[in-house]
Image 1 (cartoon, helix red, strand yellow):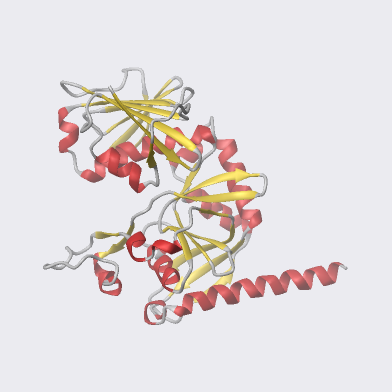
Image 2 (cartoon, one colour):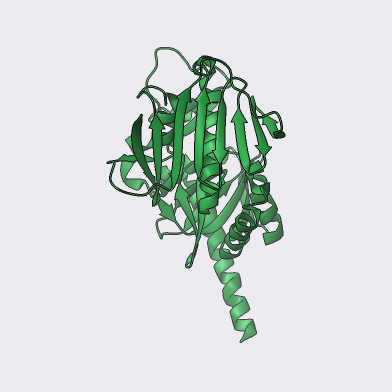
Length: 339
């Protein structure tokens, strides 16, 4: 049995496997999710994950009940245990013990990479929840003045495009698509999670400086991986305290504009981008407290992103600065009125 120790924002994950090549896509996924391999020191791990091989397909216990079935991945619960399966293999999660045991069938390694990534990724995120680390589908950047901004939205809302525009304007970055949230005495922190960026093949022409040169064009309607760290290594930020929430949506007509959003609507949109794990009864209360606290420490805005953001990349920086100034002016007026 071989063991490897990984570190992520102060927690340690120990990976056990019978052979060094069993982890496969998991090893790359851990790196993509900001886990750093570290020396096997005498440090008590926060999470254990073990991998074993099975001669045939593996099924969840017969008494387990299905919780979700999405994009080829099923989640099932049996008592305090949780199971993930893509149809051939099983990832058994003992959340109370912070342990995950994967039993992999030979067919698992023939599954599409995206299916394997979901299998491991969902399991890892569930193991992080008892440690009060909660995922959010959002990009995160930091302004020149140190203001943390979360760009929250579903796939296709323009998060990656907007994040890259701001990076080109000199902003720091954590991720374009996924971060962790953690509550501390000084506020809710956003922590870097997914490292590679991705852009659609249709917009690849706007990012020629970030994509590797190819002899053939990208297939249509696909996402292309971008190693943003290679081009902008010194602007990476591992964590920040967000002070702005921005909920973008792409508009086809008219110029881009930004307007304030009330906290009730902002919280609802945060809930929608927190994934099905939000509703797990053991951690739901803690997760809701983090999201509520986040809404109260931030100013929230709705951004209608038009094509002018493509044509003039500084437009977004200008809109965000203007929105922030207007909120500060309103707060100042309220202070004077209360006095």
